[in-house]
Image 1 (cartoon, helix red, strand yellow):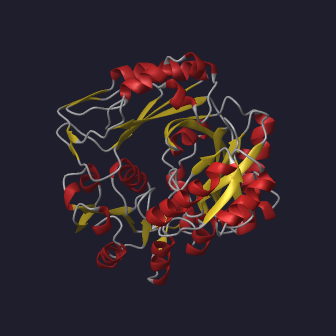
Image 2: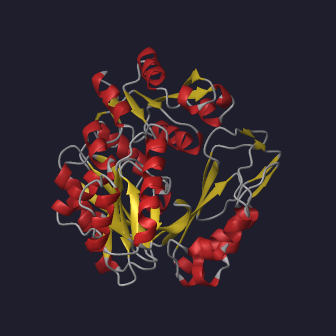
Image 3: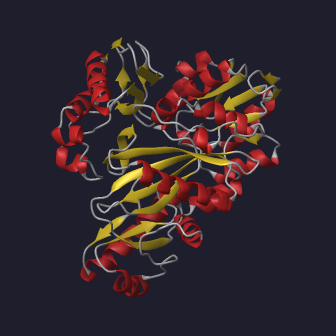
Length: 453
């Protein structure tokens, strides 16, 4: 088929290898592009919204993720049976699984994302940091390679000093990560981190880097086509986290001015060009109190928080992903990227707002917010039963306004309208954040939530 906007060849059918709000988001983008969609679902998701919105749906296994959404054989078989030309992995599950991308490549199915080789390169934090350093992108002082044993860990610590972080090369979500303040605590922390990494990721490789105290977590959205063109679409402030899991994001960051944005954006683009990156990605940095930034990692997929970038730049990142994967050149050049207003995203989770204990169950009443500048990315409905098997993200509430002050006021109003009965949610926590003096002043860092709660 032909994409009316570009006047060239486009996919006929795309399989969405995911669930929840991101699956619905991808389906909506495809429908607007005239592309047919195929949903996959577990037995627990038989009544899920993405199965209703797609043009077709195939059950790929039992509720357990390993038997369904992580079952590469079942997903590949579904694509072949349904004649899907491409697969969009969303985020989570198989989105950064190089083995899945490689299986798609071998079967002649287009994986909407980077190549499996690039995913392997940037998925290993040691290789990613080495690559960034070789390209002249700032990194924190570190071990320069994986650390083999306790003896080497102590030698490294003498070079980079304390406090330091021990991190898993294949890690994510804070697993395999230990903060160490003294030589005496180093050996036990090293062994614990290695065992945790091996258990969580099947890879016990560990590296060490200098700890950056009270930094901000700033990420740069990039988009690259298969013709060597790369652009960045500004930054997202992602410092409000619990156990390294983001809860609230916004764009632009109150800590980043135009000059710093240009520097960080240029570093992100330089990294992408240096490795030949394609499709959407996010280059993540730590920003210290002196406004120095350091490469942390790269996420080789679309991010949960992509909507705030879409709203401040007017760019549909999902559609761009699909067009780039189909071989189109980026129409947007860096000089054409404009930033307008301020956007905030609150992740609405099924959990107790005080204890953070998950709260699966049936939604007995649902009232959703609306009005100017309000967007809700969601896959829930009244009567829907939130399953206990997956991530507890229910929806993403996003607002856009001319100023940050207006965005906070708009988000507060939208959160007050949002009512979900039958289960507990973290909406009260978000309302509390919106009214916090430090948040209103833009004084946030990665420890904000631990002090706040």
